[in-house]
Image (tube, rainbow over all chains, first blue to last red; front, side, top):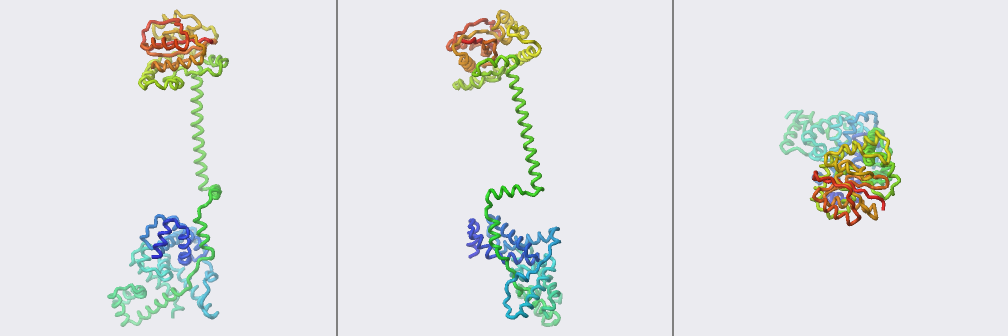
Length: 180
Length: 316
């Protein structure tokens, strides 16, 4: 209901509504970009571009898709296009841990362990083929349903399930030392 | 269900998207296969590990930066950016602009050439232009051979019907051929001879199209006889205001479905040449009397439907 009201205000060109949209979805859109690209500067660029394109396309947004799946679709497409760009091979990942959110872990040892685990997961995800990576990011990090992922990526639910299955097997093999 | 089939469904089992039937089949297999139970436990832990990672957060100031990109850009910033376009964009744009300007310049140059030619055409023979310098600037220059009534004539006679204008155009086109021939000869004469004020118009007279004109012209005396060859009527108009008389003549010709076809200077006398339908000649003679005293110097026997009239207007 809230999303419908926000969409209505967005389509009327309400500037505050757009600001609310960016505030609400900034971390999710940035998160997808960062998990897919592994580089914060590049992720911010793609996230900004996502909102810019959304802003341009808002007058045509009819509301058939949910607002968040629409944004994920724009962001995913931009990320996959960027990864397919031949110029991108030179871009290297950076250390995300430096800017990660403060951890809730009580002790320094636990924080270190968690940080190490997060880094291993990031590396394992980054090593996945792109078409599997995006499915894992959308399902296990962003919490989208199979149907929503199919909508975002333009895939059949069966294809989503099979890619997700393979991605998880890859991750299981890479992260075995943390899952025993 | 084989191990392979069961493991294919582990992801959907964890995500709780399996049908009741598939779920029952998978659980049935797991109950009999320790290896698959271990495998499922590994996948579950992996998914939990991934889902348990700290979610990344957008950098500080991200919202402001996004909002800045969608804010309408002031015109001066856009203009500045336009000047900083990358060369691959700027070069084709600049090339297109240069081509456009060059094309326009060529068009304008051609246009001016045509205008120059038209101006030369108006003042042929050139010696007349030399003389015109001494004329008062208010004297209107009249094209030698307009195909339609003069603009000032038309404007001073707005009441003339469309039908009359059509007839005027038709009349003008019927005499067009003779006009051109006469002009050519005039130009040749101007080029090939040394002009003197008293020069007799013998060459142009010889080009008269009909025997009737020859007869009429033969009777003429200088200076009135220096009008174009085919004038059927030669007249002298004494008017208090020569410019006004000229304009009135043009208006009258247009009103009578005719047109002024030429204007030139003979010493200090202005000669206006006009054409009117023969049946309107009486009207012409009557109307002219309103703005001056018209004296007919010669009248050719009327053999043509279109009368060519040369009216000399001496200074008052």
